[in-house]
Length: 601
Image (tube, rainbow, N blue to C red; front, side):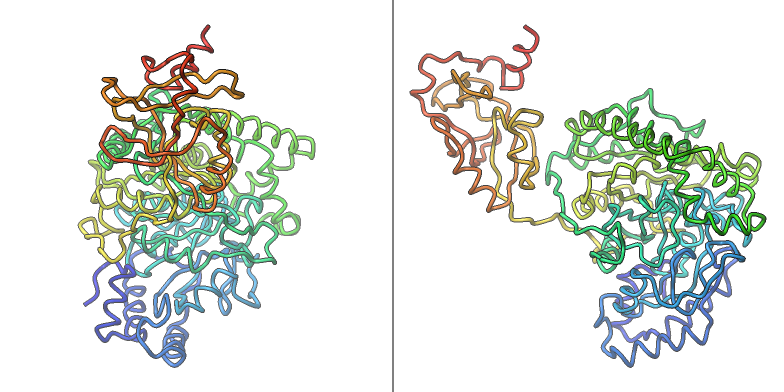
């Protein structure tokens, strides 16, 4: 007997034990029929078509689990094309029959996955709450009085209620993350351009992303990897350049107290605090950061010229079919008429000015940890104040695609009312893979289960292992530190900071004369009883490490530096003759402290 949640590991194990895809689609058919939420699907795949898809798969690839997603049932948000099923974007008058699968659906089908239906959404993917559809409002799997989150409402509910192993959503302002939080799921939001958008009805074409709802981080990442890859027919598709994150000593940015807005929801506020403590227990360094330039960018998405992209996507249809729009969606999209080309450029300038301000915050942290949504509402409450309350949901999500970031939303536990809350880990461009190990570790440590099964144990088979990138560690002590003039020589070729630590106590630090930019000289003096000196340990790709070492000018060189924990690592050392008459700054504890004294004087 299959469990409530059909995660990848469970389904694969069942197939290995003799279950067939035909058996599984019969189970899906039964579960669909028994569902108490009539608003999950706009178009369910007909029963005979499901059976035919299962038989075709077994004929094409008879060996169980011989394809990456062999026999895995999935649902598709109804703004993403799946051949044989209409695409409606939750507007019946807009409906069309796609001639082919979207790129992502084609890739998933090729890997063996089976489409079980097209799911409900906030019309034209305009909303974060799930109530803006003529097909009704899908409900939270934990309390039908509450919203499911949107716009990818039906997709989240389909996975959380056990109808599908995973589901596709889209995310412009948070639509692939907020429904995950409200239904105790993982939401994988790729870096924009990593996953193709061909065959997707756009909301804001320049920042839209196809997302994955899954039971675990490992499942979601595995599915994303099947979908991703450059598509020349998508003007916004990009070749990924994976970015790394520190394997240890991760610096996680959290909200300062003045930026913690939960609109009176003490449960979600408490869950955010618990998540921060969880991250700390897993070895992260917690760093409060200035959220203002991120929040101000978030406000631009709906209260700035980017709303004009929503009009650009449907302008001809709006002209001919205005009465077919959900009233709230129509109000939002028609509001774009207030913006002209000048406003668009002004908005772009403001965003770039804010982006410059965020760079200072990124020198302090490696990733961000934010509430996914600060609160939730009943369907009745949302319908009574649809724009303001929907805006509350986007407080911590709207900026992410504008800034080109990767994000993974994870469950964070349950409040006293039995409703779930979630948090999101956000990283710089193309840190999609690098975010996954820590996100998975947090999900497991927080113990929130999977979907509507609060007590479910996360399968070991889906655990995300730390990345083994083969990079070479190196300890830097001066001008190559984070924020210093030569740090670009490490970041440029793809290096990343592993940790900040101290040397053993018998090292001394001097200011080398006549160096541009100013540089220190680190020497070891056995018997010297110091407190150690602050260094950063970075990791460089092997080829970049060789090039880097070749360019180091004398009297500096690379030798073995002993750290405070007794380990030995390659790092900068200086020949002793060069510091014979140099100023010693050992007592300051490190080069950063010395530079601070120079700036203050």
